Length: 222
Image 1 (cartoon, one colour):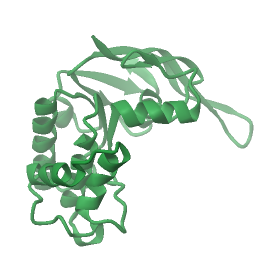
Image 2 (cartoon, rainbow, N blue to C red):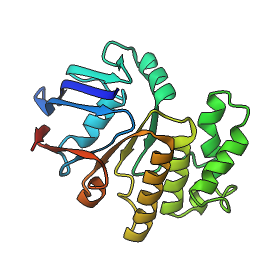
Image 3 (spheres, rainbow, N blue to C red):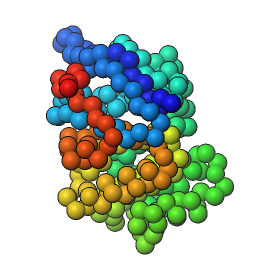
Image 4 (tube, helix red, strand yellow):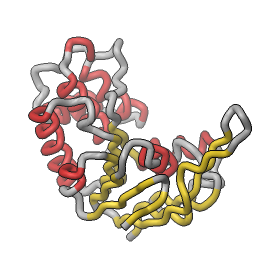
């Protein structure tokens, strides 16, 4: 079964001077359910733009995106948000934790939004899985970068997403911390049988996935 299908996807921006800049050129690929997949390429190659389109955070100029069989392109912003809430998890390079909430409260958010009566115990267990059971009551400012990313990872898996998008998940971490985050990410992903889409410039990290797509100048290269 296809979890993500991208057909002839292009994205063009219009600058303040009226000039058009095409950052993605007719990109096509398909990812099966439970597959691990990497999108690689140098800075400015269109990786993050492509991820945003695949996740329904933005709309393409042309082409189509099907997420778990749902075509995102005709949907309104609210409808795309509803699809994301039901099917998608995110891990970002800069963590994006809420600073006024503890680690435990950050992980509980998606569970509470779904009305899960077991939110507290599930969030506690997820933080234990990422080796942070002694940091439950700490705020993001009291955590290291690696600890913040592990909280973000626990939050991403909290709503049991069918597909997880990770944008440079180790980009702000030192080598040892990055390795720990990588290992936990693949471990949790395998246990949950989630489709994983990694955006990275790190070829060693990309090599751990089953397949990779290379971008250069917004085009797929072999």
